[in-house]
Each structure stands twice: as C-alpha cells, then as structure tokens.
Image (tube, rainbow, N blue to C red; front, top):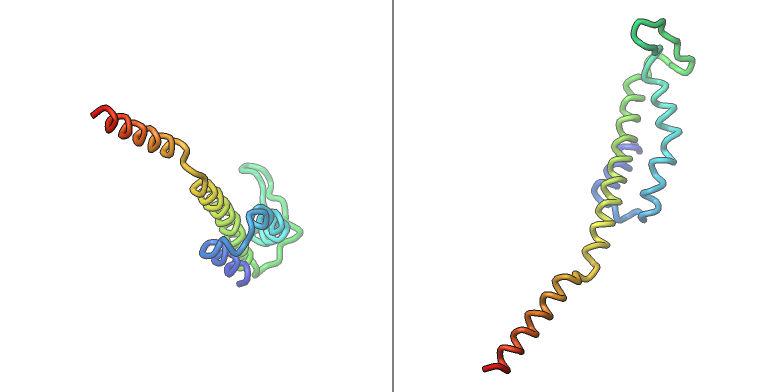
Length: 117
C-alpha cells in the first residue's frame, strides 16, 4: 500500500523530492523488489531443462509480491520521468541565447534602417 502511495507522490508531486533523492529511491528499493520477486514463483528454469525450486517462495503471497514488484518498477519509472522534468525545467530557466542574439540583430537592423532614412 505504501509503495503505491510513494509511486503516486512521485508521479503527481515529484518536486517534493530533490533530484538526488529521485536518483537514490530506485536503488534503495532494489532489495525489497528482489525479495518480492522471489515470492512470485515457486520454481524456475530454462525451457527443456529441469525446474529449480525457489527456496524463498511462500505459497499464497504471489499476488501481493507481483503488486510490490509492479509498484517498485512504477516508482523507478516515475523517478526517471521526474528527473527528466527537473532537467527540462533547468533548461527552460536558462536564457535562450540564440533568440536573444536574433532579437539584438533585429534591433540593430531596425536602428540602421531608421538612420538610413
């Protein structure tokens, strides 16, 4: 439940977290994701090979484990998008040097035309 709420918080209000926190959240949740992932299957193996029993599996926890894995994957994606929005915002705050230069050239050209008349 809390994992879903964290996912929603990041997706809807990413600026509650610093860029550094957004960088660290997925790695801090990696252990929880690994534990939950181990609860999603009782055995695994390659096609045509014998199945290997999962010693960490506890019957009846598959649904919750899959939800946790999906939520943590969603958090990682929300963090990735939030970092993009931070970058986009930082870039938008920078002065647009090209348009400033073009504006100066237009002004210079207008002043030159006025003097020539």
